[in-house]
Structures are given as structure tokens and as C-alpha cells.
Length: 131
Image 1: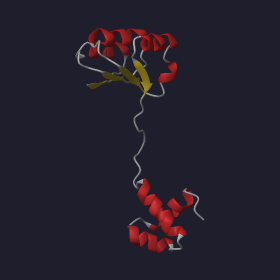
Image 2: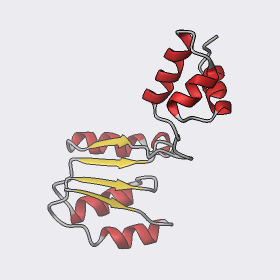
Image 3: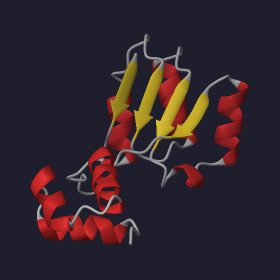
Image 4: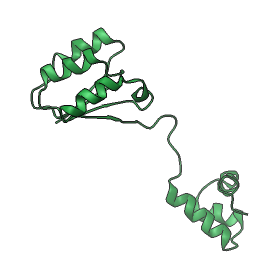
């Protein structure tokens, strides 16, 4: 069972970790996993096999903590959530625009066929280096 534990500060995170279930096998924490946090996780959920944290915090985790976890057979990994605004057009649509442009279809017709605004068609063509 996977659990996400998110908090604003360490005391709040430690409070929330007290509610972990014994059946938990994966834990995501949004703060840097210090020795204190790891001990709290293992204390409440001894069956944990994987602990993850944000990729920006992973390099700041102590080597001693990583080594101690690996000796226990527990994996500590960076896990990122997508940030920022999601893309409006998926990669398949962008690929279709590029293909049509390479085949010589005018941008105005690509816009009409796909329903993408003309300016966006030009942007997708420019951004992807198709010319």
C-alpha cells in the first residue's frame, strides 16, 4: 500500500507519520527525509520497502541515511510530480502538425484540419525546428 504524507514543517510531518498503518510498503514525504523522519516511518510502518521524496530534496539527503536504508533493504528514490501548466496539445497532435507541414500542407490548412489556431500552428512548427 502506498501513502503520501505531506506537511509544511517537520513537526507536522512527524505528527502525521504517527498515523501510518503497518501494511504500508511505500511512503512519499514532501520534506527532506532526515534520520528522525526515517525512524518515525520505520517505527510505525516496519514493512516499508520504498521511501520517496521530491527530486529537488534528494541531493540534500544525508549519505548516512541513504546507506542505512540500503542496508535495511529500503530504497530511497526521488519522485517528481509534474510542475507548471500542463500542455494543451499532446505529443501526438504536435507530431501530426509537423508531419503535415513536412508533407507541404500549408499552415492555414493544418489549422483547419486539426482545429488548432493558426498562430499556434506556426508556434509548434517553429518550436520544433521544422523548416
